[in-house]
Length: 325
Image (cartoon, rainbow, N blue to C red; front, side):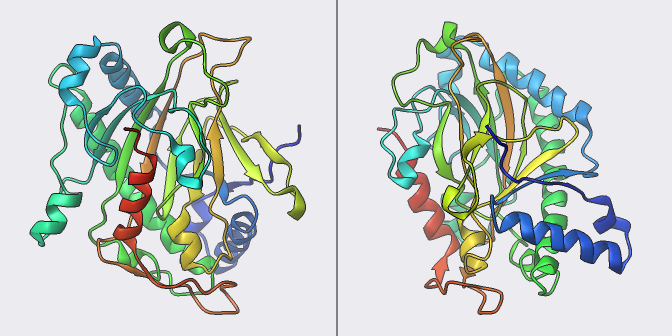
């Protein structure tokens, strides 16, 4: 099967290059996001050792007895542990899949908002497992790196549209970014998948920019590109161990008037020829400041004029749609 057209972009010309190099990079980004909605990004400066230390600490948590993990149980969109069967991401697009075959640890920004109602909804304190004390400093360091990288990416995206570099980033002064550590165990833990069951069902992300650090696997990430538009349907996403995988979500696609594609994707179940395969992904979800009004940019940049939407009303509806039970 052919791979979807997802290029690898070196971020260094954006960080320290001249105008000509930045313009060429922006042109490549614009073209890629019009098709699959995905990029691979190198030159990001995020230490691979940090990523592996986060994984090692999280793996120790996921290996704890279920009754210990249940003390940290959270709702979808909250902070803590999402156990087996908590989510079905395919439901967000109307695909009736069984619950996703994963467990997650979820953390987010810890800086409170000035509005008490918004604070209660989106800025609950993080819940750090006492059994794994090293997890908190590692995740806080990782989140700080992701927040800085997100701002650079959003500046690049504004520039790629021919808009001000802060066109998107100025709406991220107090974002509700989230961080999921997704654990995908093998069948010896989860049992045989049901028909139509995935590690994560087919969906598009809901917010602005997702930054994913993933592992290669047979039961790994697949991306959908439309065959009617020259795509290949479902296909394995290209993998580069040095790269982070970037995709845009529904809100950013609306913001660009569908010039850019919200990247549709899924994570396959454990494969029949490697049923004990275990993978772990670090997923940073970039979001806006609560109350941001997302309005489609007009032509010639935008193609579709969506009705304006409150970013966090939209996000809550989407999170509710994937909650099981």
